[in-house]
Length: 384
Ligand SMILES: *Cc1c(COP(=O)(O)O)cnc(C)c1O
Image 1: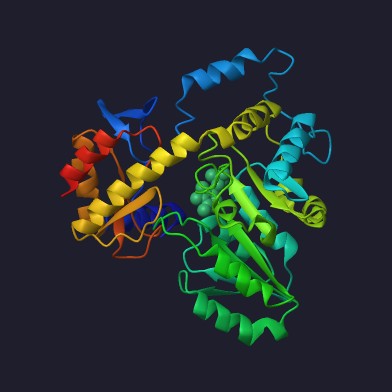
Image 2 (image 1 turned 180 degrees about the vertical axis):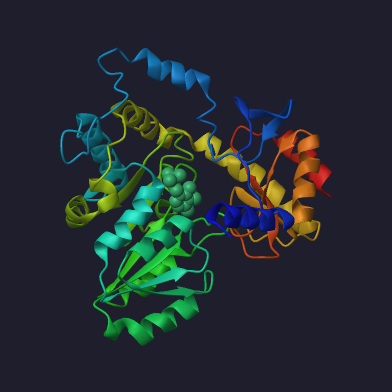
């Protein structure tokens, strides 16, 4: 069998198990999407604060631009000629907001997670990662020369045991977790993780706030702000691609960590910097994040409504956030449920293996502040 035939066979297998993926043809209309000729409310967006669909905001940003500031490319890595001043402005603003010594930005969350861990770890490093961390973190671990053990999801007792058993045998241990988890929508107990790491001199903490940046905390800085432990996290990472309605990512950290990454992080060094235009838009949004408390409150309210109704109707719902999974089980049934919802005007998507474990295929509702209470009520009526 040649390579192409092997690919065809693998694709066929995926299709038979209802796990084949295709690129959807979509038209975006603000908070709605049009697919297959049907207009549906988008319940699968990461635009958690509704900023990406806010036309007024874009108009305001455009109003401040000229041909001189409309810079669609950096033409270089930041270490060569791609370091425009807008980058430094964004990083200073982030460091000021987080009250950390420094901040560094990256082209995406994927670049951040695949670049930081390989840069800061070596063969004398042990990475202890939550079983459910995002694929980008797994890839970062794979690219590193560290040893890695995955601990049971949010099981701090097992984590504590692993640290106790291993800390003397390694130069350093890095705990790796998300704050709000992508697929279950539940959260890590950051305060406890900080407490745990502080009992050892060689344990560091890496937290990915992809789903929490913009959404949690009084200023929208994430779960670490909410828990009051920003300064206790060694690698506090987040993306601008979700609630911040832009592209790119950040780390808030000590100056030494920043300087080290600039020297060692391959996904930072060997890539063309994001367009200054994009960075200007990110800065424009970041400067407004603290004013969006009303959106955060509303998002929390409708998320709670949906979670509580799912639980009431007997759906085990692990979520404590705006990411609310409805676990169906096998992939074929999940596809059918998603189709049904779509026929009623709700664009909700199925999540299947390998993104989630076999047998836990689910509809994943990803709510945004633009969804109305009445729409959630209607969704609830449909589900039950
Ligand atoms: C989306 C996501 C990323 C990737 O961020 P991008 O900016 O989209 O590359 C990383 N980690 C988690 C947990 C995510 O959900």
